[in-house]
Image: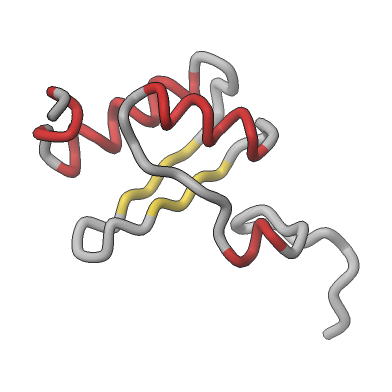
Length: 81
């Protein structure tokens, strides 16, 4: 088990935020401690985010919104309201 895997949720969130901000200074990471769900706001491509998080020892994959072409907190302009 890596040191990162033993870290508290707050420490993990901080480490992930720092890793992403090395590439996108405005990246935001939210880790839901109870569910382990991770929400990332960044301009980085999904594949790059997943690779960076995996380098930290995190399991990461695109969620449902990303699979439909949306980024968390953003609209692609193709939605009908």
